[in-house]
Image (cartoon, rainbow, N blue to C red):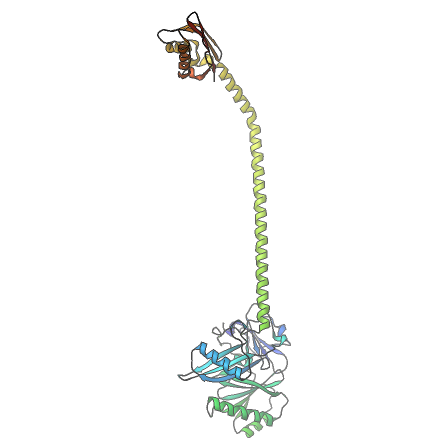
Length: 404
């Protein structure tokens, strides 16, 4: 992310704040409290005053980033600063320069406890306010943040170290003493002659103060207007730095938002199921109504068809040649053996056949009726068993067939 696409909130010399929005020029919009800022959908980056974020510069042995971070944690632990890594990270370090043997880093550490009025849930990132501006090379910068004087040192235009040293109402002698002590410390870390001058940043400085400081320190002292943020600063490689309270609030908001979305999706899904069930039931009701109407329309034609079928069935003996008396009698005659069977009576009534006859024995009579049942024409009738009666050396029988 580039700061050109973010809304920046920076501390003013008094207790107010300045808001810089993308493509804004000038001193920025003034707000009394941090909670008043509205990012309007843009990422909100909060530049913290030195009271809420301490910046420490270190010269360390060169190593890869993982080892370098462990060295930083150890070094600052010796200074009494408790650093947390991982998810609960409360610091962020910046590699300013690197050589074969050493690495110059600057570390931002959030204050503990973190000020409640700066814990904004909508914040995207936090950083030291002076890290957002281009600092003059070789200069110690003295500026006022929320009523306190802050001394900062830059390295190649980037913030290396900053700390609060006095309230705004302080004598020139006290400022000169702080500058001398800081100059000696920085010369020891970054090399003798690193500090070549002092810049008093802001519009509230008096020229007499700068002249007095220059005489006391024997180095040039100049006054510069409040510098706007460096909108070309690219932070894509920066890990996010958030106070624990903000991280927890954002996590809760994300979970709540996720539960809300799941609830809405569940309600929509349930509504869709209810709608589909209602639509299906309506469709089934319409289908049932249409089928009932179709049944009503077909009752009369079906009854007519049934009546016609019954009429044709009644006429079958008259119009179906296989049921003609002569055809049936011819079939019966074909099945009679050359001798041993005599037909005495043959009667055909509608769908019934009644045969009375004599056979030379009971077995012949039974066999004759079985042959009737197997005949292609006569098998359309259900035949009763003959029950032969032997009399005068002959077996009298009666076979009756009923049409299927």
